[in-house]
Length: 93
Image (cartoon, rainbow, N blue to C red; front, top):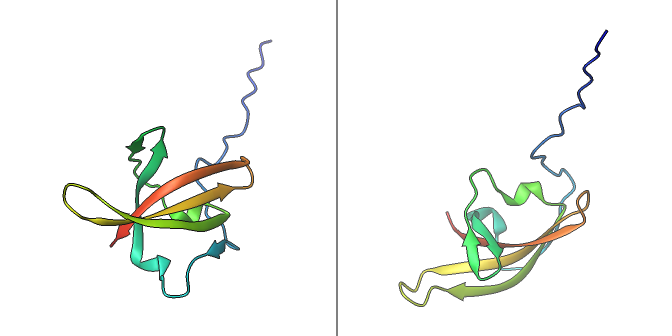
């Protein structure tokens, strides 16, 4: 008899209920949405990526696109479970 045992599927995404945020007082992070995340020198866009998926979010800086002058916010997201930091690019909704 052959038994086929599969591992339980892990959640691909999970929201973090007790997220810690470090932002300047005048910044409302809820007015922003994630554009993508930094991979080397480029931005990777990923549908479904949001700040709610991270345990901790820390403000890095504001920046603007040199060509079209659009403003962005760069933040550092940390996921405790994966012990991984990710630089996220946010824009106003």
